[in-house]
Amino acid sequence: MNKLKRILALAGAVLLIGMYAATLVFALMDSPAASDLLKASIAATILIPVLLYAFILVTRLLKDHSGNDEDQHNRR
Image (cartoon, rainbow, N blue to C red):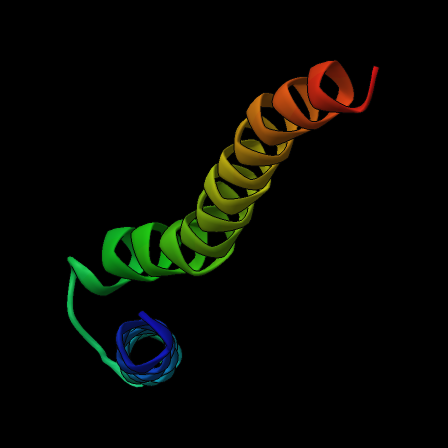
């Protein structure tokens, strides 16, 4: 499981670097579609990490919550 987390973290880092590079390329392009592509790239650069963090947070809270209920009942 630990190896899978490392692979997914590396893939996420590569994805973020790719999005930053795309943002830079779109900012420097001189075409009619560059403005829209730049806006979409900036939005993705902000929203994707925020959504992933929220997903991880909710998953951790649900996992801890279900485990804590069983532990508390066993202690009584």
